[in-house]
Amino acid sequence: MYDRGGTMPRMAGPSAGATKIQIPRWIQLVGLPILLLLLWVVAGAARHVVFLFLVAGLIAFLLNPIVRTLTRVWIPRGFGVALVYLTFVAILLAAAIAIGTVVVDQTKSGANRVNDYFTVEHGRGPARETHADRDVDRFQVWLNTHRLGGIKIQKQGHDLVQRIADKDVSNYTRQVIDFVEGAAISTIKFLFSLVLVLVVSIYMLLDMPRLARAVDRRFPPHPGSLPLLTRIERSLASYVRGQFLLSLIIGTSAGLGLWLLGTLGWVPGMDKYAVLFGAWVAVTELIPYLGPWLGAVPPFIYALVVHPVSALWVGLLFLAIHQIEGHIVVPNVMGSALRLHPLLVIFGLLAGGEIYGLPGALVALPLLAAGRATWEFFSERLALESWQEGSAIPVEVEIEETRSMAPVPPSDPPAAASR
Image 1 (cartoon, rainbow, N blue to C red):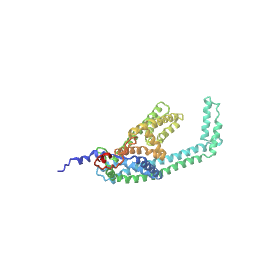
Image 2: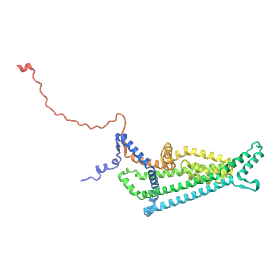
Image 3: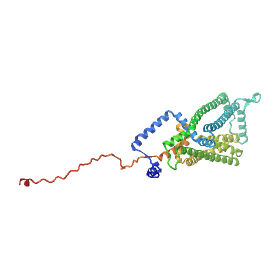
Image 4: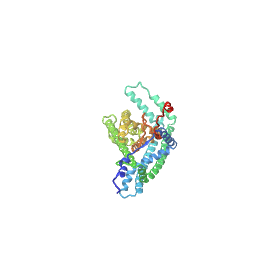
C-alpha cells in the first residue's frame, strides 16, 4: 500500500527547498565579470532610459501596498491604480505650478526693485538722487556722528553707484529673469519626463500581481520566508520611514535653533517664524545635498533684511546642521532604517550624484534598499564555490579492472630437467 506520509513527500519538504545552487569557480572568474561589464555598457548606453525605468519601478513598489489595500475593499485594481495616481499627480502639479509661479513673479519683482534702486532718481532740481545715493549719504552721516568721520566713503560710494548705473543694471536683472525663466522651462521638461515615468509605473503596477506570481513560480520562497517582491516593498517602506524620521530630526533642530536665536535677541523676531522655517527645512530635507542649503535660504534672507549682522548667526547655525546631518544623522538614521552600514549609505549618495546628478542622489538610497532585499533573497539560493587552497577538485577517473589470472607454477631447474 502506498504511504502518503512516506519518504518521497518528506524529501520535497523544507530540506529540499533549502538546497543552494553552487556557482563554479570558472563562472566566478570569467562569467560574472563579463556579465557585470555587459550590464555596465548597456546601462551607460541607455542611461536615461534605465534611470526612468528604475524610478518607475520604485514608484510602483511604493504604491503597490496602497493599491492592494484598496482592492481588498472590493475596488477593481485598475480603478484603484487610477484613483491613487490621479490624486498623486493632482497634488504634484498643483504644488509645482504654485511654486513656479511664485518664484518667477517674485524674481521679476525683485529684479525690478534692484534696477529702480540704482537708476530711478527722486526729488526735484539738482538734488535729484537715487535711493542708492541717498543710502551712501546716510551711511556717511552715521560715520560722522559716531566719531568715524575720518572714514570718507561718500565720494567712492557715489562713483560706484554711477558706474553700476552706467553699465545698465537692467542687463544684469534681465539675465536673472532669463535664468529663472530657463529654470521654469527646464521644470516643464522635467514634468514631461515625470509623466513618462508615471505611465511606465502604471503599467508596472497593473501587472504587479502577474509579475509576483511569475517570480514566485520561478523563484519560490523558502518555507517561512517572504517572496522577493514583498521583501522589496518592505525595504522601500523602511526607507520612507527613515526619510520621514530624518526630516523630522533636521526640521525640529532647525526650528529650535532659530527659535533660540530669536529668543536670545541675536536675530530679532525669528522666534515668531521658527515653526514655519522649521517646517520648510523638513520639506527640503527630502533633497540630498541641496536640502539643508535650500532650507536655509528663507531664514537667511529674513535675517539679512531685519538685521544684516544677524544673518551671520543663521549661516553658522545651518552650517552646523549641514555638517551634523551629512556625517552623523543621515548615515546612522538611514543606515538603521535600510540595515546598511553608514559608509555604504555615504558611498551610495555620492555615487548616485556622480552617475546621474541630483536625481541620481534622490533614488540612490531606495535603490540600495531594494538591492539589499534582492541580495538577501538570492543569497539563500546561491553559493559560491570555495577558493581555498588545497580544496578538492572533482575529477572523473575511469578505473579499469585487471583480469584475474591463475598462478603459474615455477619451472623446473635445468639440471632436473636433464635427468
